Image 1 (cartoon, rainbow, N blue to C red):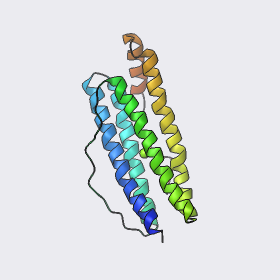
Image 2 (tube, rainbow, N blue to C red; image 1 turned 180 degrees about the vertical axis):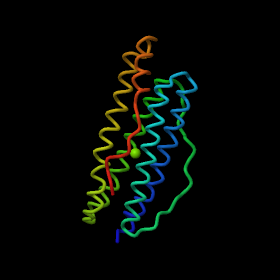
Image 3 (cartoon, protein in one colour; image 1 turned 90 degrees about the horizontal axis):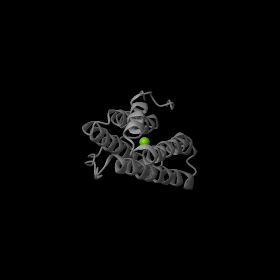
Image 4 (cartoon, rainbow, N blue to C red; image 1 turned 180 degrees about the horizontal axis):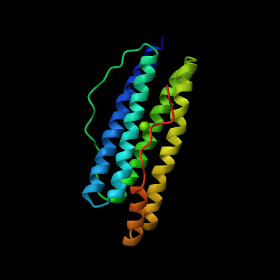
Amino acid sequence: MLDKKVVELLNQQVNKEFYSAYLYLDFSNYYYDHGLDGFGNWYKIQAQEERDHALLFVQYLQNNGERVVLEAIEKPGVELSSPKAVLAEGLKHEQYVTSLIHNIYAAAQEIKDFRTMQFLDWFVKEQCEEETNADGLVKKFELFGDDPRSLYMLDSELGARVYSAPSLVL
Ligand code: MG
């Protein structure tokens, strides 16, 4: 049995991951609307990954005999003002998610819940990757976004991304 506070945080994280999926689907739609289908593809796959994250938290709770409580998912609350600004919002959101994961980790650590800490290790690493990717997109757009030909190449590169299931198996 898991600690009540940890279970509450894990349940909240299910919601936060689904919210991330919803937010990134909004980003994806924005890019498709603006003719940047590669960016749209990138964020659509990002949304799928976030849904996978949510399901991993669900699975972990269930594996530990805990009840999963699904709450309403908030409406995507980020203003999509320009293709470049959206990327910056993506980075900001990933930094926020990192803080949430670290917060659950700290709660688990405090009560010596080694099992949850080990489960979260994958997410700690994953967040490093997510931040690096989001930061990379911001930097690439800063470098190439103003040149139509370079932007076309960048968009094509992002269009080549294919979905793959998470490497964590529970
Ligand atoms: Mg996530």
